[in-house]
Amino acid sequence: IAVGGESAGGGLAAELCQRLLDETKRCGNVAGVLPLPVAQLLMYPMLDDRTCIQTDDMASRHHHRRHLVWNIVSNRYAWKCYLGPDFDPGDDVIPEYAAAARRVDVTDLPPAFVICGELDLFREESERFAERLKTEGNVDAEYVEVEGGFHLFLTLDA
Image (tube, rainbow, N blue to C red; front, side, top):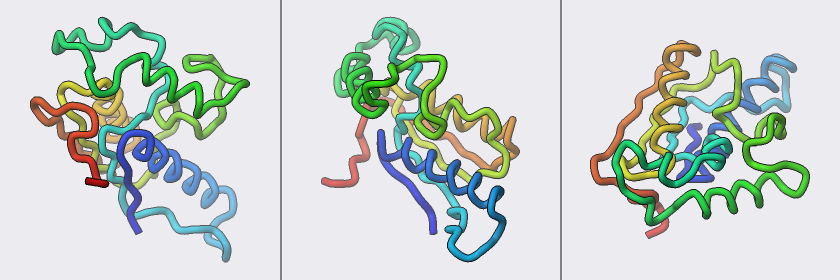
């Protein structure tokens, strides 16, 4: 079984892999523990709440365009709803599996294919996450950036 998702769903897929890895390490291969997925398909994933603490101008510095489909304001709102009333995006401490990019040890995670558009707010965090998987975690990970791609350009529910 592979897991994947778009946007927040991509973040949830990455977080699920992290949680399952930890459960497997904690419990071993005993009955009742779900197996680790064989792969992660992360499409413009929402991985890092700390993206919310930058301005839209900072986030778009590489391509000099505003994020028209998903911007800093919508991202802050989504993270605040997801984290709930006890946490704010960018807080020093948030729930353990809330933001996949915050994981310190990325070893032993499933292989990952990460795709993001050049014009997506999540471009930098997606690229960083894939690079960390490869370099720090020795995970087979590929990052693809689509020229001219914006948030949700591959939408699954069309």
